[in-house]
Length: 259
Image (tube, rainbow, N blue to C red; front, side):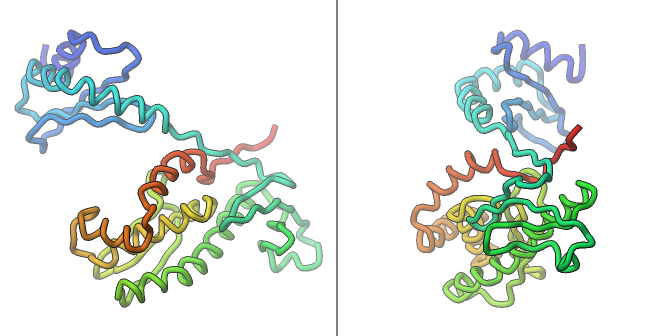
């Protein structure tokens, strides 16, 4: 028995919990064995090409307690994102406020100005195919979010002596709330879905990336970055924990058509 099958057999001999979903992956560039616990609790054993099955089994066995803890956490925090139908009255959270969707006929007065949000809590979008309504709603998040980002980001620029920073709001996939890209881009980007979270978490996402912008060549989350976060947001660790829990229920654009 050679290849991945040999490693699977060696791991099977450990009598691991049957609910663990363990996969093996031989990685040509790896020098040491690693373990990755994925969202939802799946386990990937990352194996260098020079490793022997018995070595990998010993490594996994010695990390059994660590794996157990990580699987419990990953399972508890497994994504359970909201799904929208885009019907009249459906609710959308944006920048700390809640709006009810209002579908407006294209022939109605003022339809050319849609989509828009109103002070009385309406998110008005032209009635059309649901996929197009979805795009229009996300466009509102992007537009409102970018305006907020540019406005609120300024205070961090001044305090952190950040110059020449640009901003963007776009879809960053399902695993990132924000990114800072160093020179030559020197840009802070937030996921449009961030702006549907509670305000303290939106503020955390911004501060997180702005702290990176103060030290573009420094260690990603090293001491300098942490000092900056404590200076700007003393409770940043609590907000990070809340983001892990609340964020898994956030709306990331998922939708379903009504039958």
